[in-house]
Image 1 (cartoon, rainbow, N blue to C red):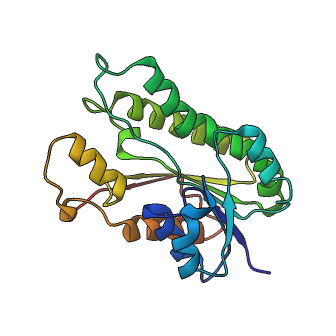
Image 2 (tube, one colour; image 1 turned 30 degrees about the vertical axis):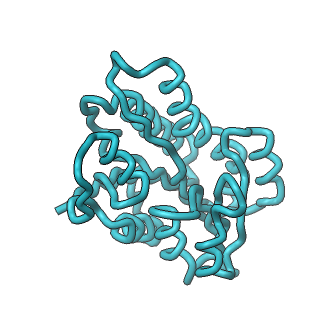
Length: 223
């Protein structure tokens, strides 16, 4: 029986790249807020199973995981980034960022703990370089990623049957990155950023590391 992996935010960008890495070896559940957001990657990976659910709707998430009895890999990739200085960012921005980047991750993981325990599974948290160092204008996002790192550390200690890996990539060439660069008023140059495929391979390599090892943190930077 092939292992099963659930990838959130699996419809495009880094999530789609992660799905491609796991498709040859895993039965895939591809998460996305709407079913149509998954159509393109499902055409490419027709054996994958769509898992459309709004991760901010915790009742819907609980219903969506009800039939998952065993889960080998959970990749938390979905998230948001809204930039702004502390002076300019409103409490709403901080709340929404934490809801998407932290609370949704905690809720989904809690619902899936029985299935993860049954498989001695692996939880991968796609964090950020901002989860290690905060920069001007990135306060809310960085704070959420610091919190996500703390969640991973706590989960690792509390659930010894699981492996928990925090991935801290630098900025990645994605549609989200293009929007961020535009908001910064700069010209977009893809060569300045990591490719989604490079980060996705790091995720797969963490999961495929020998069972006697525990890759707790992986940091990637563009060359």
